[in-house]
Length: 424
Image 1: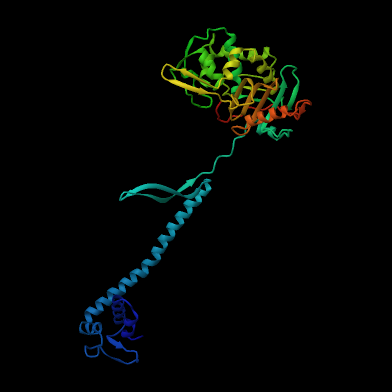
Image 2: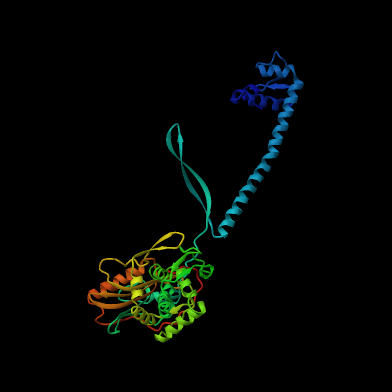
């Protein structure tokens, strides 16, 4: 053993020095070992430091302190494995939680949270961090056309619409054809038929209709600006149904039809059959149902027929309109971003969207004096249908359409999907 004095000098803290002395005395007889290796009896005379003198003067207290120190050291030694085991268990728990989070498909990330505080009249931005779990986004639900691979059909204009059909209105000549025979959900394009059946009934347009719970969307669960209890004339209902694709307005029009909604749907399908729309079926007046299906070729017939109604031409091409519901004033705007755009002369239009149908657009427009009907179905992206229409117009202005473009092959009749979405 090293001399106690040497150990005490090596220890920077007096407490540790005293502990070393106590442990050394508890380990053996009350003898002092010097650096030279000589031993002598513990006595105040032989002791050189104050600690040594106190230890020699009261050996019982020294032994008590040493024993206490020894017990404390033993407890610490015994506690260390236990503490390590607890820490290990906690770490294992965290690892298991992290593994569970990863199994659920989520990922833990640190997010910075910034807040503004004022201290002594000075503005400071304090940043703190918290850990949150991010669940990955659900996989994209494909529209019916995309599910059948129609969007992969190549075409000369690189359109993003799965179906594109352009026809010369006067001659009936097909100018551009991409999957025109595919039968797909048509969403709110259905409202053109709703408008024709409503006008064919000859009911006064000044009659007031009230929105009820029966007009709410129980198909997709979408909302509406027309709250239950709103009261509008039939003309106002038809106006916002065509211009802004107001679903509750279209639903109310069908409910106030003689014979109610079942009779209205029967009239819609009868009108489609009368127009020779053999690939078309209507299941509701709004287009929210994915059972409302048609082909581009059939929709050309419907657009031609709808164009014969001055009210449909005027209401569908209006850019904005105000209505009074009896509770408040509502301002509506057109869902077609091409309305009022320079260079476009649109005689009739209707947009549509639900998840199963994708973004849809039908129009009657004049391109340098040439009336054409454009059918664009199942486009991807919020504005892609309008961009596709612009590409078609540019192509026509550059001389396109002299030779009909046919890109459609054998296309299957699309099945009905069950995704959620909204009609536009």
